[in-house]
Amino acid sequence: MIIVVLIGVAALVTVPLMVRSTRRQVAADQRAVGRQPIMGSPAQVWVSRGERALRELGNALGEQPGFAVLAADAEQVVMELRITAGQVAELDHGLARIPVPALEEERRALTAALAESAGGPAGPDLARSHEAVSARLAAAQRQRDTRDALVAKMQATVTELERARDELAELITGTSSALAVDSDAAAQLTGRLDGLREGLVEVRGMTNPEIGPAGQGHP
Image (tube, rainbow, N blue to C red):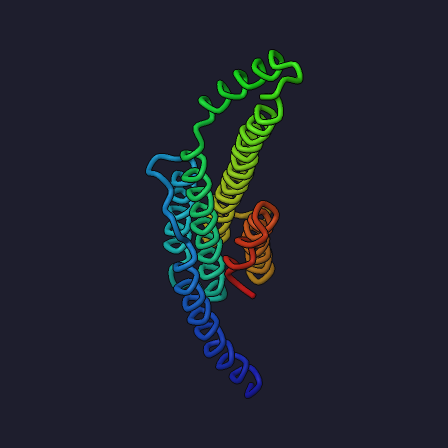
């Protein structure tokens, strides 16, 4: 009996400490978000859907025992979404400064000029200009590919977060057939949320090694 009481007290102390620690980390991570995505852009839309799923998940949890850490984990997922959206916004900002159509037209003109020069004295300078313009276009394409990969990861994360929200609602109302035991279900959902957060951190690290680790929520 005494052991049961001690375990209960330990749980009451440990869960609030974990939640407070997570909230401090979230507050620190807020500073890593940086530039905000444009209203109506894909990144902003996915962040908004993620935030809505987080609110609805929190409402479903209410005072449910055994799930206190779950809401904090979901909050970390949404924090990583915001950081990823900030990186997407930075990429969009950089892309907006590269006049791709004008550069494509310039490269076509340089290609024609190089063919006409046929080894003349202007050839080396024309070749250098052609190389520089081509490099700028290649950089723009890499940034577009990176942005698209980040947005795709955001979409997958949000749809999985919405799935977790719906499964939690089933679990709490006792209608779930997929998640049978409360403790096991909480562990499954927590593991899934950790996977979503880590997936966002991983894709940021793959697309930009300098940005990815700096935005991690948990160590």
